[in-house]
Amino acid sequence: MIAPIIYADNAVKILNQNRLPDEVIYEEYRTAEEIAVAIKELKVRGAPLIGIAAAYGLALALNYYTGPETLLKEHFTKVKNLLAATRPTAVNLFWALNKMERIFNHNEKLGLNRLKIILIAAANHMLAEDISINQTIGSYGEELLQENCRVLTICNAGALATGGYGTALGVIRAAHEKGKISQVWACETRPVLQGARLTVWELMQDQIPVTLITDGMAGYIMQLGLVDAVIAGADRIAANGDTANKIGTYSLAVLANYHKIPFYIAAPHSTIDTCISRGAEIPIEERSHQEIRQFRGINLTLPEVNVFNPAFDITPHYMIKAVITETGIIEPPFTESIKHHTVLIKSRGGEHEDFA
Ligand code: MRU
Image (cartoon, rainbow, N blue to C red; front, top):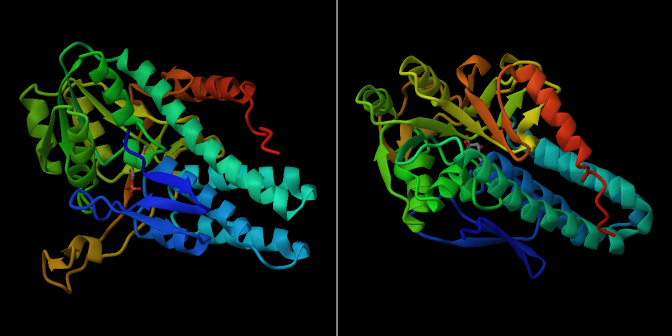
């Protein structure tokens, strides 16, 4: 299985996704500051994986702390704020940081040496749990797909965007394991090409049939009748079901609705933000203009051209047929069913796991 992040020998090893698919290179990190840069630069990316990387960042910050214990909490908060400022849209980042903070607070009295072990254990647990959540999402989601299914996806919501296995690609993997997938259409996903570089690489590793298209081709292949379902991941889902995901997802949802093709979101509960009532309230990250003007240093246009580069868009809830989660399939009306599933996930607990 593809492992996008590994903790070993007191260091975090991150598969540098900017180098894929040409090179498979793990880089070693020993500080939260370095991890924050890796998140900003998309070396490590995808909503759940950003959260896991940040959790390891906090664990490292304690592991290498040499200051007085009286200033430990202050240090922890400073590092937490630094990691929280890396990317604004994926709520999993804040979910993971808050979870680590609760574990820190719960165990603070035990002292630095115990806390170091506890936070590493908590980050390791978050990673392992994410993989198992994705496998559950996969098994619920594959039931929605018919035999010989042709699925279209965008960006990379796979093993590379999570602890492993993936959300949207987790559903595709599970369906492929049942022999149900005849074709995956991967949108290249301008401007950073997560589809062309990452999704294609991931699916080809697992011998899942994949065909790459440019983003503008999606409508045409739907019109030709070559798509049975669209499945995307999510960076944040509002309480009413409106969903932020990679720029271009909304266009796919409009096209899928027009062509009467089911449009699904696959995501863990950590992506649902019930504090936000609707999509318009979700902060959308704007990234460097150079991402559009250039690719790997090569000019694609005039260097001084004006550019707009939002990294995500919002798909309205009424265009989404269902949200596939680890507690099952969430269907419209989303406000009610998200409430119901949120109660389910809370009843499973897990907030105060004992890592001591
Ligand atoms: O900018 P990225 O590459 O971090 O964007 C990733 C996406 O939009 C994914 O679809 C989303 O995070 C879900 S990953 C399971």
